[in-house]
Image 1 (cartoon, rainbow, N blue to C red):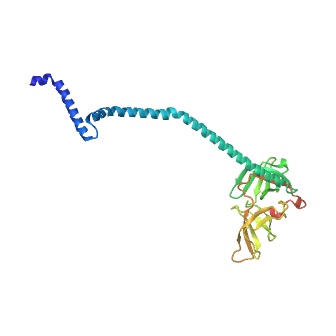
Image 2 (spheres, rainbow, N blue to C red; image 1 turned 135 degrees about the vertical axis):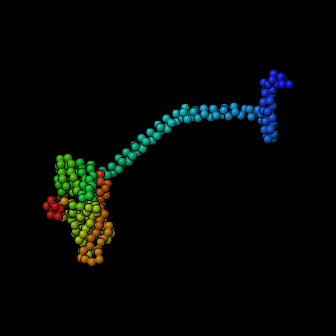
Image 3 (tube, rainbow, N blue to C red; image 1 turned 45 degrees about the vertical axis):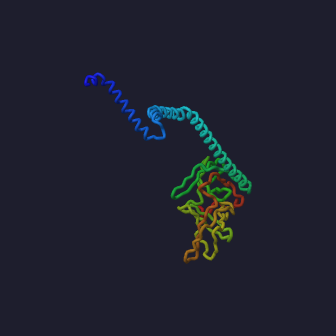
Length: 285
């Protein structure tokens, strides 16, 4: 017996393994009552190969769609994005051109509004410091500009020429803390002096207390200093400060011109309404 087992141990081992495998399959097949044992055996044996095949197929698809087929798609998307950006830039340039054209039309209409001699200029630098607020424009003495000439837009007063070179000029804004000039409260015909401030506000300080003032009252230039033409808008009353006692009241104004957005200005070279008045008065010094 021992010699038989010893001589046939390989065959016995193979048969034992097969019997164990068949017994395991029989148990598994019994748990899957909806299928016969042969079908389940085939599926069980084929499962590793199916899984491997599915994995390889999936990876091949991923490689194809993400690295081969989508190369052209990505290139097309990039081309379309570049085209879109170019169109956006072109559209923005078109809008800017339209806005600039509208501004220049208004300036041209303003030029023909009266007989004052005017020069158009562009703002090239803005300077805003704690104690002064200035603009630099691209026209100077070569264009007939001199100190104390009025600088305006169709909306109203911007400031006056402070200093001049051959090709550039410095404009002192009306909200500069050193700025002061005579104005007129249009509704009441009250003459007063307008002051700039360190905070950039516009104020009129000494108005008789008995005078009734209202928000949105228009303040214009009086023309008395010989710099600004008479009747140009300066601003509207934003608030009135009467205080609890005293003979005077003060007001704060909102400028007619948004001085943060000025791009083009007009310099008045000759004010025909004030041609016989002095160039500036003591109050402007």
